[in-house]
Length: 321
Image (cartoon, rainbow, N blue to C red):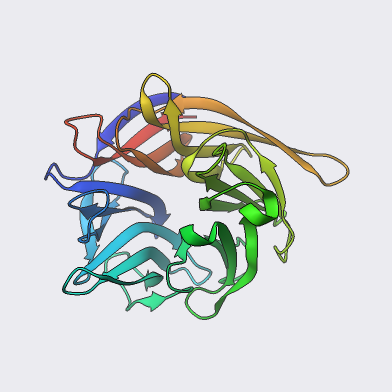
């Protein structure tokens, strides 16, 4: 891999711009991110930018709510060709008390205007991402976590209609002896196998790789031996599996990096996996939460960083494959 360019696309406005996602929809490119006063504050709003060429970007829409922090937006496309926006809604009272926290979704047919909000899951369960099955219409998987529970739950179904928990203890301290599972991403392979990257922030902090076949209720877990924050996973057209995440460098602190996930399967249907570091992107301080998109022999990575001017801004890196 060769880094060709890195460009800031969020404005230089002293706002904290972070937690990105990137997708192609209806022939155009969309990036979403949270803009607020700080990494953790009560004024988070979602900025959605659009581009026709992945070079020139402009604001397409803004999603905001009164006394609300809208966090960690994610974009996906459902089986009916709708653009889906997932985020975590932290609602506050006028006096500043946190009233409730719920994941929510909206949909759009053009990426410019959005439907009303539909809330998912239970209070304080943070649904991190929606991954739609490539052939099962409107069927998505998503992993939700709750810090106090020290476990994650697996949800499945249509997020705009019926989306239910199918595994209340997908991974937990009690079940596997490894603590605080949280952020995740799921990638479907051509044969329908689901791969799940699962961040942890306790004991060794090593990321877990889960594999399962339909109906996605029995999972095999592998410890990959790395700490990865905000992991994302993409299978390239040539079959390679690319991981984007935050790592910790002994010399440089937190960095945004890309890995290749090498996955093999033996005749007993058991998986073996390893991670190979490919590239560290220009990044420092508060950074990462990348998203990956392959186009015309290049990998595009959206992420945020404060390596320039100490301000958290959103960047797009173009990488030759």
